[in-house]
Image (cartoon, rainbow, N blue to C red; front, side, top):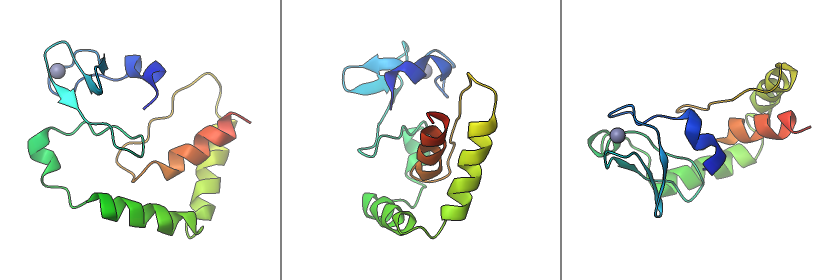
Length: 111
Ligand SMILES: [Zn+2]
């Protein structure tokens, strides 16, 4: 998670702003959210997280699958849309997997 993007996010529990607090992301009211080793931030409350089926092994498998180019046309289409958008802007990837599409969009936006 890039710290310069934290000001555009809000705590999903209390709507306070988010900031880096020690090794986690959190708000002034003590709500904390884990940053995955892959770099994405999960803003689901802990009780909701238990309902997700994604284990670290599943995320790794998804990354390997996407890395083989099976969804390359989708990645290119999203990247083209973002590259053509007026700048400056913010791209938010919400719940679409391990951030693969966002990574392609950001590379395209950086030129
Ligand atoms: Zn909060």
